[in-house]
Length: 264
Ligand SMILES: NC(=O)C1=CN([C@@H]2O[C@H](COP(=O)(O)OP(=O)(O)OC[C@H]3O[C@@H](n4cnc5c(N)ncnc54)[C@H](O)[C@@H]3O)[C@@H](O)[C@H]2O)C=CC1
Ligand SMILES: O=C(O)[C@@H]1CCC=N1
Image 1 (tube, rainbow, N blue to C red):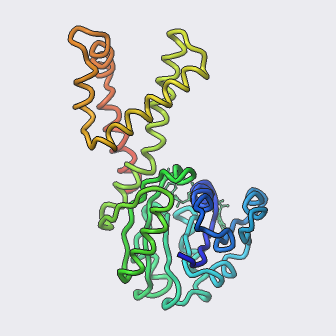
Image 2: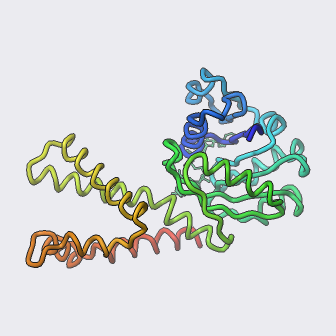
Image 3: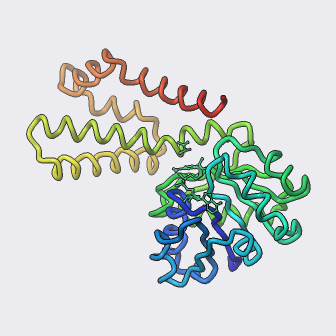
C-alpha cells in the first residue's frame, strides 16, 4: 500500500505503530506523517524521513489514511480541528480511542464517512500486535487496505463494534496484565536464587515458549498444563497454592474491572 498515513497525536501507541510500520521493507518513511503538540520526542522519526508536524489539519490534508492516536476526550476537538481538511471520498479515518463509537466520530464529519475503529497494542512496536477492527461505510478494498496495514504490525481480527470494548481489555490492556504476571514470576525467581537479569531471561523465554506452543499447535492452555503437572509433583503444588490465593479469580476480576471502567 502506497498511501500516506497520518497519526494524529503520536504518543505511546502511535509511536509503537510508527516503529512497527517503519520496519516493513515495503513501507517508505515518506508515507508517514506524525503529529504531536510537542514534537521533541518525535525527532527519531524525523531523522528517518518521516514528516513530523504540530499542525493536525496539515497532516490530515497530506494523508489518505488518518489515524486518531489521541486520548478519547481529545477525539472530538481533533475531529473539529481537522474536519475542514477531510474529504470523505479521499480519507479513511481510523480511531484508536477507547470507548469512542463509530457514530460519535461520524457525527463530527458525515454519516457517510469511511471510519474504522482499531484496537492494537504496544507490541505493534515489534510487529507483534493483535489488532481488532470494525468499520462503517468501508468498501471491501478499504477493509483489505486497513487489514493489510495492521497485518504489517501483527495480526488483525475483524469484529463487531459491540465487542470493541472487550477487545480493548483482552488485547490492549491484556499486554499489561501479562507483563505484571511476568514481573511477579521474576520476583519469585529472585527469591529462590536468581539475579534479576537471569530471572528475567528465563521468564521471558518461558512466556514466549508458552505463547508459541499455543499459537503454533493451536492448543488450549490446560492441554499443556496437564503434561507439565507430574502427579504429586512440584508444579501442581505451586499451581494449587496460586489458586488458593485467587490467581485465576483475580485475573478474571481484573478483566471485568477494566471492562466496567470502559462501559461507564
Ligand atoms: N497505550 C495503549 O497501549 C493503548 C491505547 N489505546 C488508545 O489509544 C489512544 C492513545 O493512547 P496513548 O498512546 O496511550 O496516549 P498518549 O497520551 O501517550 O498519546 C496521545 C498523544 O496525543 C497528543 N495530543 C494530545 N492532544 C493533541 C493535539 N491537539 N494535537 C496533537 N497531538 C495531541 C499527546 O501529546 C500525546 O502524545 C487513546 O485513545 C487510548 O485509549 C488503545 C489501545 C492501546
Ligand atoms: O488504559 C487505557 O485506558 C488504554 C486503553 C487500552 C490500553 N490503554
